Every structure is written in structure tokens, then in C-alpha cells.
Length: 203
Image 1 (tube, one colour):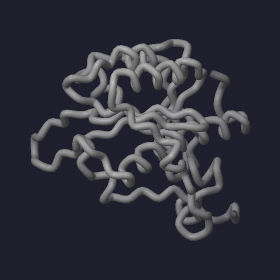
Image 2 (cartoon, one colour; image 1 turned 30 degrees about the horizontal axis):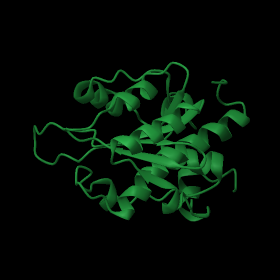
Image 3 (cartoon, helix red, strand yellow; image 1 turned 90 degrees about the vertical axis):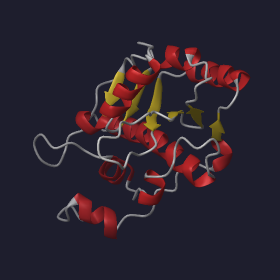
Image 4 (cartoon, helix red, strand yellow; image 1 turned 180 degrees about the vertical axis):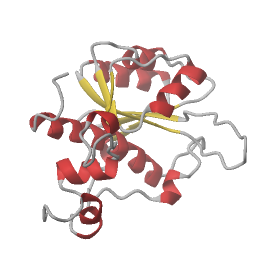
């Protein structure tokens, strides 16, 4: 990539596409036994990619009822936890509130606030890569697309149609699952790449 080309332009015109995770490696956690298995696997990790999705609001003054999906990623798999009224979130709470497991993601302010207000989960040991990674300009935050380009040399596509889709729907589409999974896993991969370059402190 030409160092004289601004990164946001290079993302659009030069870089190969970020391929992301295969659907076979995305685990949709829809039962108590599945949640127990997922949380047992996730609890063995030191660092996890993290994100949430919420059904968008369109009307003026409408308050979000999210999060409707919580994503936690390892290098091999991504676990998707639909948030529903009957959900037992104790295992998920233990992971998100753990001070041992670092959770990394992009633009996590609203995610953390929604977890707190809807589920009473006070997520701890969180690293928001948007703020932690050095921007191209002083005090500039770094978004996921720019970070994937900078650290992974790939172009991350984000479909507005999928971004604004109904994340509260009881049956998520394969497109939604892959989109959500890539958000979390890309954050983990960027974290590890930035760590290797010395741009982040050790967990």
C-alpha cells in the first residue's frame, strides 16, 4: 500500500476483501446447555473479541431496547448469544464481568451502557480499540474498517442493510450471523496484530 495515499482511500481502492469467518464456525447459542458449553469454552480464553447488536431505532425519541445479540469471539469460533426475556445470562455475566479475561472491540460505549441498563451487567476489563489504537491524527479515533486495513491489510465491508436489520428477530439470517461474528472476530485479530507491532500494552 502506498504510504502517501490516505488510509481511508486505500481501504476503498487497493486492499483485498476481509474474508471473515465461515458459518460452520459460528455458534448460535439458543439453549441453556449450549450456553453452558459456550461459556465453558470462552472462560478458558485470556482475550476475546466482543461486540453487541441492537435493533435500530428510527422514530424520534424512540429508546433502544438492546442489546439483542452479544458476540464473543476466539480465534477459531464466534459465539452469538441472542438476548431474550427468558434468557439465563449468568454464564455470560461471569465472562463479561471477569477481570481476568480481556474483552476487545470497537466503539463500545453504547454496548456497555445497554448491557448495564437492560441486563444489569457491569462489563469489566474492556479495551475499546477505537480509543486505544493510535489514529492518523491527534485525538482521532480509529474505526473497525480503518483498523482492519491498517493492521490486517484487508478491506472490511459493512452492509448498511445488515447493520440496520432487525437484530431482535427470533430467527437471524446467515447474513446477520456472519456480519455479527466478523465484527467480534475482526476486533480480536486487530488487537493481536496491533499488540505484535507494539501499539498496545500486554493484557
